[in-house]
Amino acid sequence: MPQMAPLLWLNLFLMFSATFVMFIILNYFIKVPAKIEKSPSTPLKTEMTWKW
Image (tube, rainbow, N blue to C red):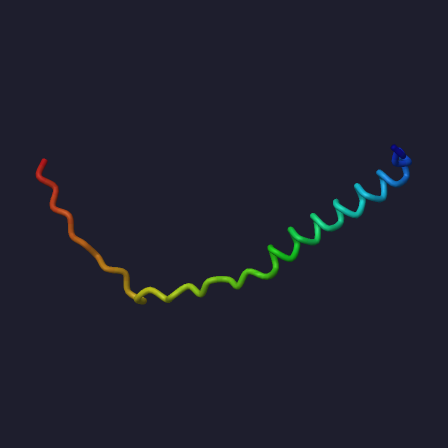
């Protein structure tokens, strides 16, 4: 059974590493950011009555 040369292992490692990094980068940039809906301009104020 033939053995793989060390340089072939290095090529294989670099190819899989480059593929993995490209996959991660593409997944990061492909996602569409969710649009944030604007809340009402005036925040609702709730009065609190303290009984102490």
